[in-house]
Length: 199
Figure 1: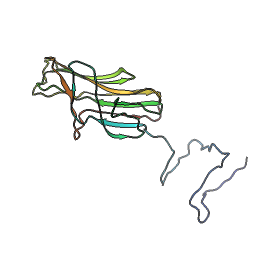
Figure 2: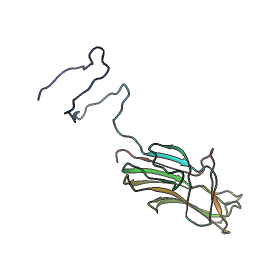
Figure 3: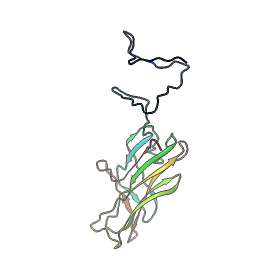
Figure 4: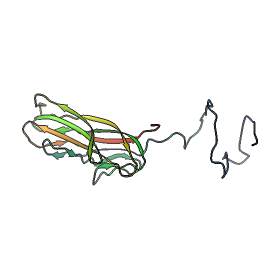
């Protein structure tokens, strides 16, 4: 093994690219304690928090009383790898295995203000994996207002068949139907996830 000792490596006149290693060099070892200073544009270092998506419900969705219902979150804010289905199954099926930070909010509303419980749930592969809820002990949210519990979770995904969905419940005093609130400007009901790095 030969050794090159120098302070500066530069390209020859007229060239803008500098390559370390050739077709047979697959590893370059940097000793511990070395600081790499980047004064330009980097690529290929660290990792990316993708696949990632965020979506929201663009219009109200009617739901039956005290029934676990999937939110048809249909409008994408972003979807880096095309892994979120916003038109048929309303689910995120990431194509890269890993741990994902998932966040969701199901804003529920019953017109007469008779909400007793409001629940937001994250489902994985068809079963509940996390939930958050608001309980109105008096059984009356007053003035027709609802609630929007937010739930977060870190979920392992296998990168092929695992999927997650947003579900919610509105339990009313009088048994009447209610709704998931949806609006383009306010994003009352929303759903998102991104891949974590280094875990």
